[in-house]
Length: 165
Image 1 (cartoon, rainbow, N blue to C red):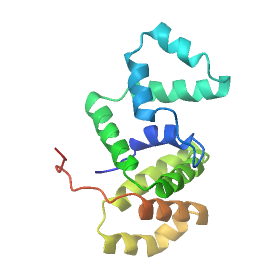
Image 2 (image 1 turned 180 degrees about the vertical axis):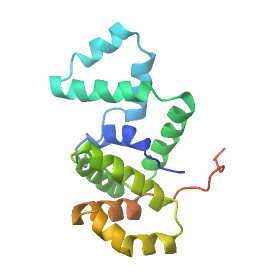
Image 3 (image 1 turned 90 degrees about the vertical axis):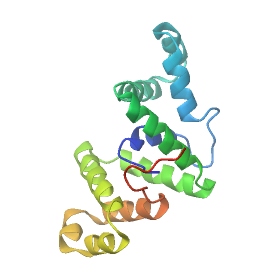
């Protein structure tokens, strides 16, 4: 299953859960439940959250709502793949996405683009790219470490067109 840049929306919700803690309901179920609610029901649920947390959740829900149906379905499948990782790897991915979320938006966009490109390269080409001068000079040590760590933790993407029944 391909974990794309769109997975960041859902994984960002997951990353907001402290490492080792389990949300009462998986984020996908929460999003689906909130999407089935009327606007007034949704506001009632969200009003119980602390102000900062509510703003973050509302922003992420709006972003999710704007996705086309196929992207929502793909994102759900990507989250299911994430759920299949051992708990230790899930916790590490959460920690890394938390680091990612603290970066300026322009750098996050650049890292998303690079991650997508790296994940779609063969292992040999990926290693060559990561050893190149342009990669070394284009990213600081923290960014290079973050990319490498995520590449090591996340399952490899499936070839385009492959899907699970």
